[in-house]
Length: 304
Image (tube, rainbow, N blue to C red; front, side):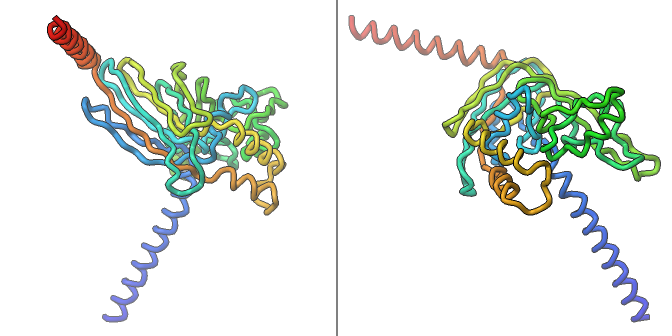
């Protein structure tokens, strides 16, 4: 009896250990892909969130029509507005991990890309669940990009081989972004990857040399993405040069890879975010004007 209980207990511990190992093994890559933090849009609530962004150049790279950017260098937030509201936020580089101040940049999009989506989705063996129509719609990655291995799948599905470009990744901070998850090809039945597009609103800003940037916008009801990354041009030049110097080899130790990894060290920042409905915002504005008029009248009466 005791042996049987011991065996059952051992088997249970082994199963739990294997499950934990599987969870850890699968959680790592997922955490490296797009993961959204939801911001509170309740009237009067200020969300204060501390996060990191890889490198000090992710947002700025996304401004370049030639290279685009690596989505893994950005931090993604989402918020839902039940009605037309004015959002107000400040992003401040804090350097709490001593990796350097983040010079922040941000872009606002209508909609979201799927959680867990990433650059290079489609570089999977036969039976992969990424929609082939999505893979075929991609224009390819630079030979030095971490996602260059996806180019053969792209060429095999776009009907016109040779569309490889100088793209670093899939993210753009000044245009619409479409991304896909890998799906679960080994599930029974297989679960296809999810594809969606977030549409650039035209709202973005950056601070290339300072630690803080603010934004205030009036937006209609809907779901939005706020994406934050680094905006320093000197750091971008260094980071891009080191990426190119790897020649696309991000596994073999080299001086270029060491420099590239140093460029990508996470930089901390704080986001203060709030949303106010338009009627309330108008009321506060009107109250402020009334207060100023009252103050002016009191001054005039005092002078008389």
